[in-house]
Each structure stands twice: as structure tokens, then as C-alpha cells.
Image 1 (cartoon, rainbow, N blue to C red):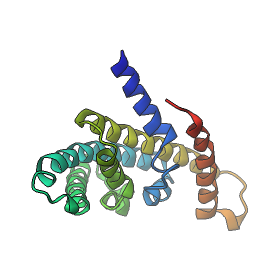
Image 2: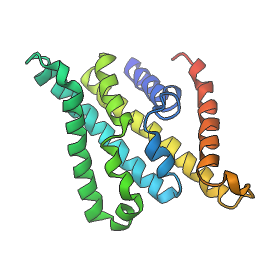
Image 3: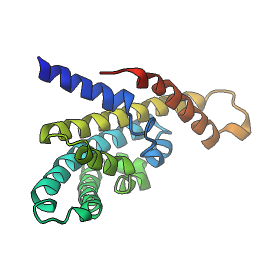
Length: 195
């Protein structure tokens, strides 16, 4: 029972309390760029969940079975970025083959997962927090779910704002940034929870 409560606490923390987009401000480029339509936001979210989970798995193994034993942990950032870039190339090829329309709608934002600091952030956080292997995988998965949640919420709001009577000077990016700030304030309310 304690394991389930620990997993639940980790999920709530990664998704709501310490959301990478709204509390750590990582991954803002795809958050603002892909949140114009729900279908592209969902596709990007699924890709980020996969990449974060796999990156957490592989970077954990690389850190503890190659970098630390060879005493080259100072190469951590470079090795992690290369690992993430390889995973993103795999995801990009898979999406291009299985869902060409999604591939076109994601456009340049799919390769941007490579430089998405949220993916690198979760990999480094797993090492810094001294998570076990399973905890690192779960943290990567839950961080991806949190990223997808806020991406879908933002896309839903932006779709609704397209029909709203907004002053011309506020359309597009200005209103998106105001909504992002409001969402960050709303999620800030979760920071008082101690789990």
C-alpha cells in the first residue's frame, strides 16, 4: 500500500505541483507554438510523454552504468542531449510513417523536442533527486503527462478564444501569454500541498 501512495504522490507532484511548464517554465516553445489546435497538441503531448519516459530510462542507465563507473559524469549534459536527439529522430520517423497529417501539423515543433529543455530537465532531475530506476521512469512519465495536460488545456482555451471578441492588438501571442500566465497562477495554488 505504501508503494501505491508513493506513486500517487509522485504523480500529483509531477503533474500539478511541480509541472515543468507552469512552475519550472521549461518547454515553453512547444507549449505556445503547438497549442493552437487540439489535435496537434494531443499528438505533441503523446510524443513528449514517450520521449520523456524513454529519455528518463536511458539516461538513468547511462549515468549509473557508464558515466559514473568511467568517472566521466562531467559529460552528462552532452550525453543526455545526444540520447534525447536520437529518441526524437525515432519518434519523428514513426509519426511520419504512421500519421503523415499529424507530422505535417506538428511541423517544426516535433524536432524541437530535441532542444525541449523540459525533456533534458526531467532527465537531470531524476539524477539530482537520486531516484531509483523505477522512480526515474515514473517521474519521466508523469512529467510528460503534466506537460500534455497543460498543452491540451492551453489548446482548448486558445480554440475558444478564436471565437471570442478580443481586441485586434491582443489576438495571437499576446492573449496566449496572458492565458499562460493565468494558468501558471492557477497551478501555483497546488504548490501549498505537501504530499
